[in-house]
Image 1 (cartoon, rainbow, N blue to C red):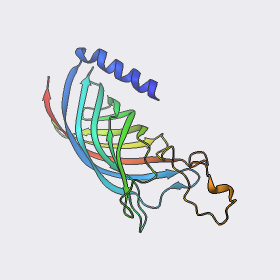
Image 2: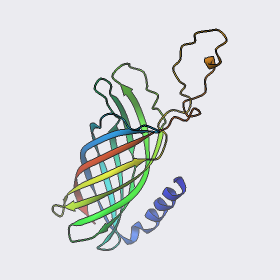
Image 3: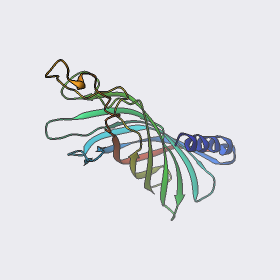
Length: 207
């Protein structure tokens, strides 16, 4: 995944001088959840927000390469428990214009975890893996030359559980073998992000 992403960024950098450059801002809503290995998604999807900047290079009237730099909040919730993951995300997408104002996109990239919190304590949660690689796909509709609406699905690939996190356990005897437990990852635990993102974007300039 890292090699594919690095190659895409290299192509993006080398060819940008031959393309039409656009940039602007975007913001909108997230609807996020955790996919728990062996159990499926958590109980409820959690609403949150995202906001940031976007940059794109239009190679032809149909083909565009785009980057976002976003603050994006994710997590999940149940009826009594809520988590929040605060990310800085840098997805790269290839956009193909199917019709005059309608296009599809596919891509991916890394997100950097700034902070993870829940509603039960002030300490960081076990979901503290700093880098989350993921894929994304979506559709875009241009409302005008400057305004557009975008619907995107993000599929996390990385285990968001921290590498050193262990199972919370209370020993009942001095010779209990679980006094030195394995990490959650070693025990087979894997949680990955899922997110649906609805955005409104605004273009500042066309060069």
